[in-house]
Structure formats: C-alpha cells, structure tokens
Amino acid sequence: MASVLYQVGDKVKDLLTAGQAAAAFTTSIRPVLGFEVRLKLEDSGLLHVDVVPVKAVLRVARGNIATWETEVDIGVRYGYTASDLDSVSGLIKAASISPYLLLVEEITEYLARRANRTLATVNAGWRGGEVLLNYAPEHLSKHQFTGVSRHRYDVEVSIAS
Image (cartoon, rainbow, N blue to C red; front, side, top):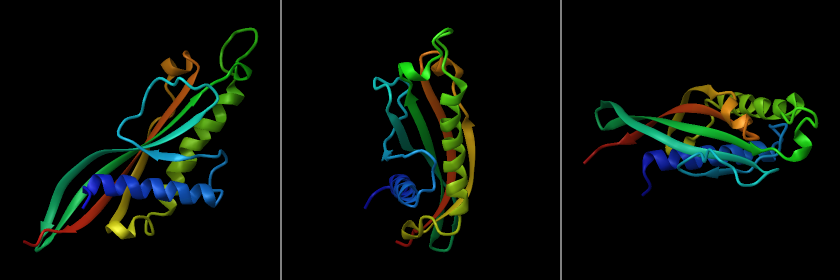
C-alpha cells in the first residue's frame, strides 16, 4: 500500500494526463510525478510539468475515519531557445512568456473544475488551489520559465484497528 501523499500525487498526474487527452490545455503537456521541481533546466525547447506531492497532515478523526490534508504542487518549466529571445535586447519576448503563464492558470482552473470528480479511487476531495508562482523573474534572466500552483485535497482513510 502506498502513502496517502504518493497516491494523491499519482492521481493528480493521471488527472492532468486525462486533461491533456481531452485538449483542456492550450499547450501540450506530459505530467510527471516527482518529488522536486528542478530549478535549472538543461534542455532548451522542452516543457516539463512536474506533479510534486509536498505535504500530508492528519487533521480530523471521527470514529474510524481520519482525514489527511494533502498538498500537491504542479511545476511548469520551460527552457527558452534562441528563437524566443529578442535579437536586440537578448530578453525573452513577451509573446513567448504568455503561453506558459496561461498554462499555469489553465491547470489551476482545470483541477478546480474537477473538484467533485477528482480522486475518487483514493477517496479525496479537492479543497482549493492557488498559483504560488506566476513566474520567477530570476529564472527568466536565465532563459527559463518556472511557474507553480498548489492544490489541496482532503483524503479520508479508515483508521480502524
């Protein structure tokens, strides 16, 4: 049996994969379950969408049922190529940043729309989401986009002995 946090992260990854198949996002994604969002990209021109389980706290127990409050981050990372840069200033073109800002928002909205249908196989309910980082200015200076959203799920589990 896997940990509650791992199960929730894995199901969020599956949900994002289903959203990709349903064309819910304007940019093509391939979500990957991991346990860190790497802040430096080696690969220019590649988009990474990381599903990162970050926290599980046991909050409520009633009878034989306990509720875990879990948090899962979604990291969107893209390494810009020369074609994304302004030929005069060397800065990233605004038009090259916009699609990834939109993707962070689309992922957040997509998970919110599935609030009541999300992680039924692990008995989890979506409790909220927020964009933690629209973009990291210090990463843009290194020609990388990094955006992060965080999603909270409550997971009910049996604690009967």
